[in-house]
Image (cartoon, rainbow, N blue to C red; front, side):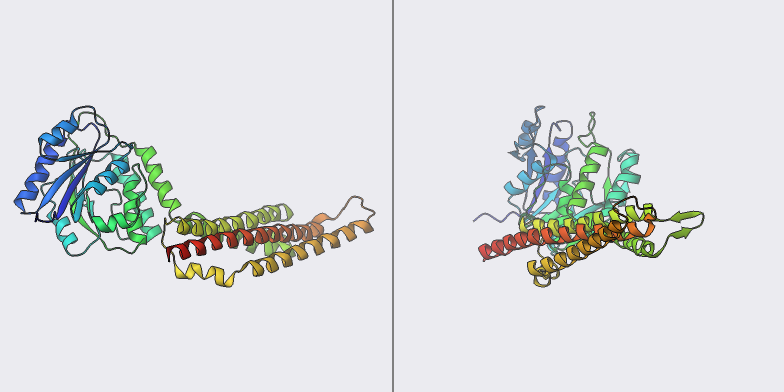
Length: 392
């Protein structure tokens, strides 16, 4: 019986003939020097410069990945790898495949994901563009730590190790550069064990420009982080705007608000009314997107959120929405009766009348939103329960 492969070293490849060979030789030397039963797998994304032949000549196994993209190449290599643990790294000779033992040790200790950290290690001269080093990577890593409470200082390091079974279990889906973020985010939200080790980044050995496009790929990473964090995309901004606009709306119900030389009055109240409506809708987006992402298996369920359907039922939503509609209609009738006294002519003193009108409008709009959102949430809740029953 052949011995189980402990470690697979995988590299994505798209026309890396200049550097692929030396990367494979370094990885082979590491495996042999540390007496590890391992393999080297190249996820080739359609190379036309002889990279595939170089990999085979150097003793690596080549997996042809037809779907284009950094993430697609890596995911294809991960699926075809045979090792219990996997270490992935770019094939541009910017990472040192001779010194991977800190990753292996952490994986043997039970970590599910071990990230390299270039900022805690060493970044050699001209190995990372200025904007990536001092703006892009620090900013996106900060956002990742803030959104997902994961203690990783270098979210986008391309050298990382992981438990193959754990990584396959979290259903990685992205095919582009944002795959790097997805791996960290999903590991965190599934409560898997993460560690990091300092590494050295070297200038890559290619004569051509890298595949990475700083602004385009940076936006894709940020977009992914926002989409996987409905709280920061919808809930927190919505609650903040709702609180501020509600406070000013309530104060303006009584009288104008002087702020220095500025007087906030009816016209300001109109904008605060609009802000309340918009922020309430944003909060509803959070609830619906959260249910959708759970239904699609993008993020795991949370008991506290599921209790929403225990306390906020369709019937309670209809009652609340109906009450607000009733308030709005009552105030509207009251204003019409006051208008009737003026024989439906011009309203000279609009200050107090418009205040009642804004309350009426706000009650009517929120009432309609709550009624139809209650139906929508009920539909999503039914789908969620049906999916859960199918799994059982």
